[in-house]
Length: 134
Length: 160
Image 1 (cartoon, chains in turn yellow, cyan):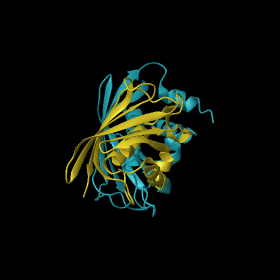
Image 2 (tube, helix red, strand yellow):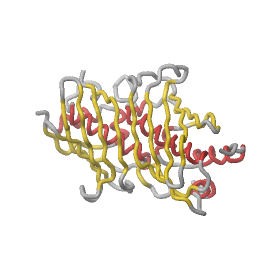
Image 3 (cartoon, rainbow over the protein chains, first blue to last red):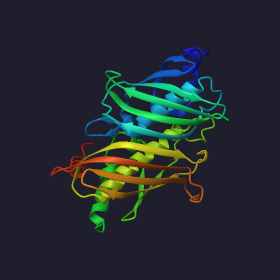
Image 4 (spheres, chains in turn purple, green):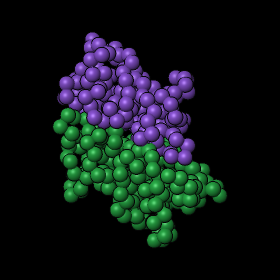
């Protein structure tokens, strides 16, 4: 299994992942967990200073891609599609994501992702992502 | 739906441009067309949004963010008296690899609005390649209606 330092070195080479500014915190063959730092460029609602829904979805997609293919050489795993359920506003502060690979076949992987801030029991969003592995 | 007045269009453009911070400002979105058929917005190419070291391949997430943003705009245009709006859910299909340095064009509309919910759909392509759609999305939004419209709060209170 690839070590966290190598994964985070890969992450830091991806321009959009630097824009998101997150770090992979744990990893095994079927899971990835990451934490993202709040930045003003992540704001969707400038009055309330909530995260933009698209940033939350992007962070979930990034974590999901790493869970299916953590040792990507050039570009992360190819996304096919996604669905996201927004459950609570993402407020100013760190956001965490946990990706679970539900199924990894020869060609397709299905990944479920959950994001939260204070407690996993109070999710900010849940998502389902498909990736093409060929 | 009522015709959109020139005044309202200007207010909408002003609202987007006066945000001063946040993702929409960073995406440097330009409103190209606002009509009862929906809205068309341009996002200039930005290497920060790429995944590869050559910086020619956009990350899917930025396309999702773009759809989410422009759905919001389409709802502002289509629905009167909305005080807050929150994305309930979002589905995006990535139809082909988003490899280009061209500007990105997105078209979105609200195809059904009720008292509490708005339903949206949109498409994305690279400028000049409308026949090669790169992503398509649908979403639903929860609306709260009231006297203090978010639209007014944002056009009047442009702090920065």
